Image (cartoon, rainbow, N blue to C red; front, top):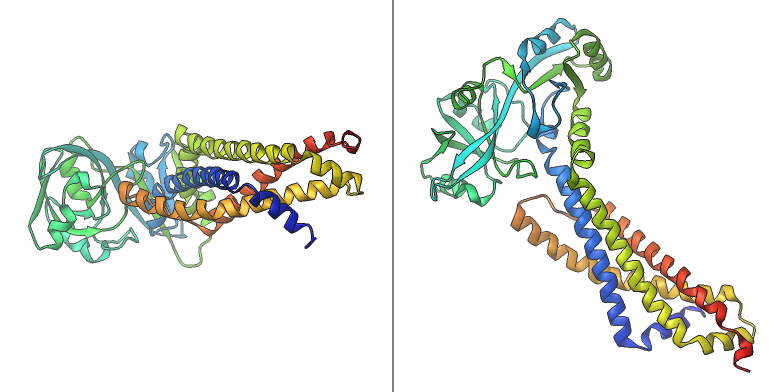
Length: 384
């Protein structure tokens, strides 16, 4: 095997310009796959950060709700009915809705997501929430997500400088008294947290007692799966009872299959794979065609078709590895720029890096297997 490697290497490096073009093409295909998969995973992750932060075991939502951006309200009496079960320790209503935020500097409006919670209990495991809960007990006071997009204004910067920060939300003047960290998502560019009382003050059209999410905490040792099944049998069918993980999967599945965005990113990945396959095939096919006489000579002196196939596949493997390295490196740069521009969690993961490497090798092997068919026409009789 060690004697076969130099032949494939010499074949590739003989035309350095062609090799550079081939590596650029493979790197481009890798970058395309990396970006599509990165944005897809950022889509899923960013839209479930709130779900993941919930400090509870079971979640109740309206059965007509599709996702966080399309929640339907239900009576909190359904939630408090869960206290009839012995395994339930406490229940906590959560309000959420979208409304208009007016940039205090430019005056431009932009939609923002507001969560209303009981400030007596910390329901969200997010940086900055626990230490600021007492502040939102005051009228018209909110906590601002420091990771919101810049279009909302320099709110976090002004607050950290000790300035008084006020803004208009749904034509109501509010005051920012604390910062927390959640992050922008495909569903919301910015977030606010306030008390349930302040939430009703802002959304005057909302009825107190009509909640969007019901969070249930169980007693120590209680089996969440068993309690969920008991609640499904006990509560009316207009309520969807989910474990915390099922609530996360519920949101993820909506973005993966209930919208066109998940399909588009998956399609983009497939297109990158196809583009890379075509590029590598063209390179290897040209390589085989130009050296057809040499391959015929190898056949004439006793080398088998299998040996020639191995040589071509070795070339494909070398192209895959050498093309992957610049593709991976440039992707890291693009991920950083994408995070800065969108504030979305676009990060490289080990699993994605390995998956794209495997796809790259597979892409090149498929191209090599197709290109090697040309070797069948390399007949030694044509030479002698």
